[in-house]
Length: 94
Image (tube, rainbow, N blue to C red; front, side, top):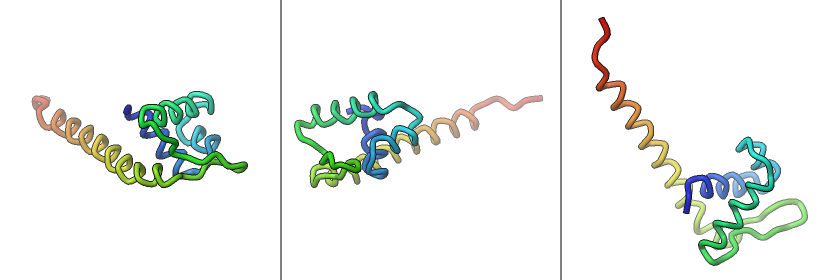
């Protein structure tokens, strides 16, 4: 399960539409759709119901959404922590 796949999943879940999620992520729709399909394939279950006006989370998607948001928040927190440590460990400039 890649971070990119989780980011794609959360964007589609929040937007309810692949096109809007693709715009939000600054990618085109085909790779975004492939990310979702790859995640569903890896998990062995569909996460969305494809509806005429977009995508609706299935109970399986609802179950993943909370975890995906938490994982992405932890990744952001880890990056912030590392950046802060790098700033703190720089030698003083004269």
